[in-house]
Image (cartoon, rainbow, N blue to C red):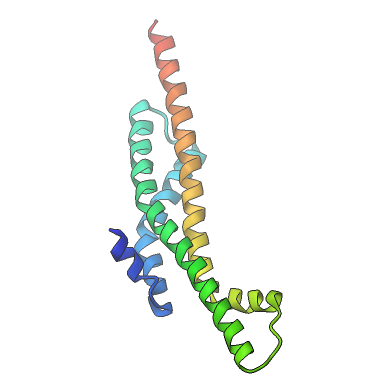
Length: 148
């Protein structure tokens, strides 16, 4: 998916859930790999190497989506905040920054939720990559030790 395809999901509120649907298969893969890691099912250098390659691909797929989600969240927040401020000033009401931030935060809650979901899976992916690298190193050293 290129950045223009990704950005389309963040153009309007009604398209947001579509990006989560696109990520479901990848999220499931991460969950499955996490389960294998917890259960100790990655036991050979080939399994670790293949899993590491898969995780690297997953990371490369998810990171642009997360960055666009994060940027969209910030942009929507700023826009909502400024709209609230302008409306209050147009109605000669006193604008309080803290309440404007809270109101804007409520308006963009779905954007924040999606950004956090992608961020969470990216963090899990990073941890799994590090774990696979460590396990691969340990298995390689063990293999070299037993063959000597």
